[in-house]
Length: 169
Image: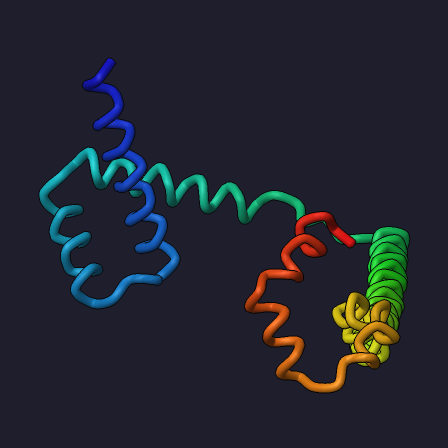
């Protein structure tokens, strides 16, 4: 079985080069090589004769002509295909345009969201300061009775504020 494959491959190569020889597709070096082999190899020469006879038989076959219906139906198929391709291209263009609009809307929404967040942050800043200072603000009336800052520092040194901090007042 393995012996048949190389011979089939060799026969295929021989046929290819002989057909190229008959078609006039070879350069002068290739033509010289084939003609030398034709002189030396009777099997090679026999295969060339078989191919030439096949070629001649092909020339004797009637050539069929395409009728008008065939040409008409082919043109119709090409026209239908062209219409389909035009529709497809139109749909692609519409999709690209719609995708562009969706991208623009998404960008505007994202920009609006970021702007809202920045403005909200800026507006909330004073409120955060009030919340941070809430313990001081709640006791502002008590602190108004204090005459000096040194007095408050003395109270802190005496650890009088520790009870309020620990109890959560």
